[in-house]
Structure formats: C-alpha cells, structure tokens
Amino acid sequence: MASQQGTVDFLVDQMAGAGALAARKMFGEYAIYCDGKMFALVCDDQLFVKPVAASRAWIGEPREAQPYPQAKPWFLIPGECWDDREWLTELARRTAAALPLPARKKKKAKPAAQAAG
Image (cartoon, rainbow, N blue to C red; front, top):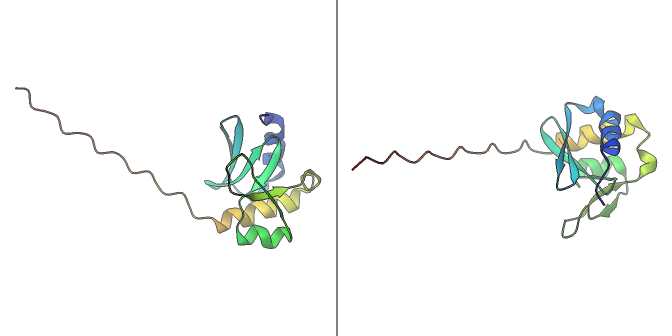
C-alpha cells in the first residue's frame, strides 16, 4: 500500500524546524531530506529514520523494521510520537547532522566528435 501525500505533508510540517526539508516520491513511497541529506522514509504511511548512532541516542530504545522488502532495518517511529513537533524536529536535526553529504555525480565525458570520412 502506497503512502498518502497527506501523511508525508504532515510529517514534513512537523519537522520543519530541522532545516531545509523536502520530500521526494520514490516507487510509490517517499524519501524525506534535510539539508540535502536523505534521513527518513515514509513507507505504507509509517515513518522510518536512518539508523545512526545520533538517532539511536535520541530515541533511546528504537524499534527496528524494514521499510520495504529486502531493505536493511531502519528505526520505526511510532505514530504516537508524530504529534510531538519538538521531539521529531530534534530527531531529524540529529540524524541529518550525523549523515555525510551525498557524493556529487560526475558528469560523463562527451565522446569526441568523429571526423567525417
């Protein structure tokens, strides 16, 4: 079951104080970015956060689950935590801060023009 846009909009709004947030649709689900770093997924209307030491420390004892089949476990954030704007914002801030910036994609070299013969 695909996630609803309303769920994603609500979560992004709740975490808006963490930095520059954006959600991008991916295969019927959503990735959430903070300052250009993907730190969360919304799959089947559930919130998953990348499992880094900073997010584990903030959550305490996180529940781990797969956001989609064959995925490594991420931290599943229970729905009852979603209404706590300050808690979610700090979770987003800490998680994103612990992640490296994505590597820039290298431009492919254009093939040399072939001489007309």
